[in-house]
Length: 594
Image 1 (spheres, helix red, strand yellow):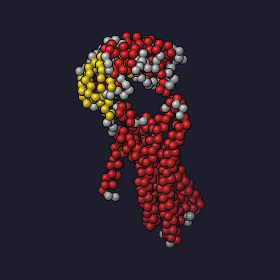
Image 2 (tube, helix red, strand yellow; image 1 turned 30 degrees about the vertical axis):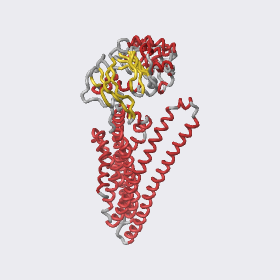
Image 3 (cartoon, helix red, strand yellow; image 1 turned 120 degrees about the vertical axis):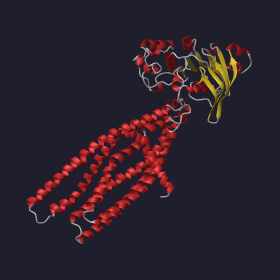
Image 4 (cartoon, one colour; image 1 turned 90 degrees about the vertical axis):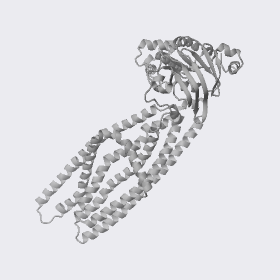
């Protein structure tokens, strides 16, 4: 092995255990105890294997002793066998297994919590580039499964396997050095083959995991889009796409299994040659009177018995490759840095009444500029409508104010301080947000609403629902507020989801409102019923409203017209309709609907 490959191997080992050790460390004495029990289990296996020598030589073929003495030795030997088997192998093994399983589940829980916590606090840039199916696979799929399996085999199986090998070889060395040497050479040859197979399997596993991640993310996306599949009648096309993905997994799985089987065959073939060598040498040594028939039998039994421990070591070596590949995938996510990090010393508290000021603010996503050189002040309490063609930057402006993204250039301030100096969660708690397509969690309506106000009493929740015109359908449900929602609120219509989202925003009683086409899914009557309530709730508070309906725009204090990332017009509804420009064109072209 050259210096470079040795360095890579060492770095790989450090990388794997450097991630596992902090999670294992609180339970290190329990892990050590489990390994001690499992080591004792290995010694018991050695005794079971070598017991045949004493049964044949000291009981069955022993000359010059009476039948009573022979039977006494037999019962003592069998009694020791049962005691060691039942206590040393079964009971001790079970205790070690229980201890390890307790630690394993604790370590897995810590890994899942750390991963989810990190991902949960990452920015929208990260979540836009990673599918939910991929992240789910990290948490509960083969990624953590590979690490779990390696940790289990290493702790639970390896100590027993190693002690079985060492104890067996040390014991038979007392009988005949030549036969022990042949047995040792067989073991060493097998280990060399196993190490070769381990390197090959690491590459095979990494390639399969890459394919599995890509396919799982794609299939998860197909399942999430089931409604639109029905809507556009593309079931057959989606079925073909799914078939292609499944076929890709089939091919990769077949390739992986065949290559894995070849590695097993390589090891098995070496075992056959070694067994023949051991039989020939054992026969020669016995015929020359160098070993007894019992010892000959024990050597043959030892060779067969050592295949199990060697196979365990082979599995652990193979699984280490899979665990390392999984770790590299986890580390890639865990070392991802948020593009909107919380400051080391955040400004406290976030002001409840402050102006929003853009100063030379620009934003780009990757290489595409979305907003450019914005110089804008929104005084506290002002209601501002954001209008413009699709892709003009309206939603991005809102996302910057909520600090879902940070400006690429310039400064965005709230209450006189750069919003990057506030903790993101503290900032967003000041806002009541109603997105165009609100997400409803798979829990009760009550819990969906109490996300923003966990301690809100029942009457306050009902009042918010009535203001949002949501109580009319909620009170007809079987459990009313305690009715559980289907996944993503699938049991509700688009308009009902929007009304729940409006009720949630009203319940928060925020200092600032953000409404992104908040009533786009409502009919005209429902919108009128809600609009007065919402406007009353927003009175005296800042409101940023993305709207395509003239009724909404007319009631705002100010209209900002965006195009290609610039604010091209700024004024009241009355002013902008009287002067030529994009706003007048949007109204004339009915892009702002009556």
